[in-house]
Length: 560
Image (tube, rainbow, N blue to C red; front, side, top):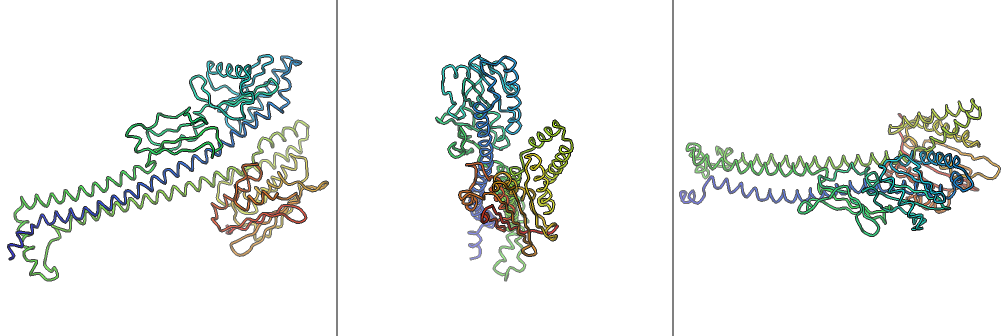
């Protein structure tokens, strides 16, 4: 009976069959885990691309809107262009063109030098560049002829108040122009410069970015893009112009695995290596059985004594069965370890994105009146008021020094209050008006840590938008108190007209203010507080009686 039993059960084949049986669920588990990892990687990669593009679209839309407003206001209202009339002389034209170039240079300081401006007066056929030329001469002539022909044919004289794609010198540009009273002001920018902020995206070797016009035609792309079988490993993400407010839609072909493709390939290689190693070990057992007699006899003897051994005592099968399984177990642990590392990398990438958003929002709320300060100092010096200029420079230097030192996450409250005083001193001297300011801050609050440039946002909002009663000066109050050991309340009031009902509704509902351009700093501040404190803060906006705006902020704080 025992001989028949041994004839049916071939020991080495048993080990090999068990190895195969073990490999089947491992392969199934690997396929499931790999599919989950693939889906998660694809989702995270697309999310990273979408977040970056959304930030880019918002910034570009603000920039194009600013340029559009600048061109429209300049050609219709700017007195500089009044010198371009038949009663003036060439010297007046030259002076006006130089002043226009200075105005454009100031505009380029905030929007970028890649935007090129041109001016054309059709009554005397005067054409000149209002900014530094960044194209060759042949392209410059094409631009000139395009503007002249549009004016002469009266084709689209208003420019439809929109940016249009056009090709000059074999390169694609965005083109905007407006004509008023025989004066035409135009701006062009190459699509290469428009899309340059997206060069940091890791789209893969064949990844490309395409711009699509309003009629659905692709008028510019960074590369040819994936074709044929390569397209199966690339993913297209579409960003319509209707949602971004841009004059073109974006289509981005990005590699499915993106930044995490190497980790996924490493995961597959690790598994295949483990699987291959298991089969090599199984083959080694088979060869050992055929060519090494003594080990096989010892192995057979151990098997033959299996019925006589109780509870496995004295049975030595570790070298023939367990070693392969241990190898597979070790490799599977490596596989799980790689998956864990992948999840950690994704989590760290999400943290980096939040840090970037905080930095991005913080940059938005920093004051943008550097040139105004310098212009005020220049005016004071020109008028001979040296003492006032010295004071203005002292306040401005302290103000800038604080801005350059707020890269840290938090600062003491007393530092932020001093910054507010410097800002109001600058505004009083620059605007030649008196803004009264009172601060009621207990000594125990001075050392409490708050995010830098937090309170200045609300002070700026009052200075810019609050209108005091007739005959009175603008007044601003700040009052602080400790609510408990780790929370502080800050109240900011003014004697202006208060918030409008629409503004209060939008702030309380968390809506953005891009539509009217007012109070954007407050909405950005709310987003920043949300990233820093999650839901552990409270910001209330209301109106005082009989008049005035009131902002109440409660945040967790710690003493440094």
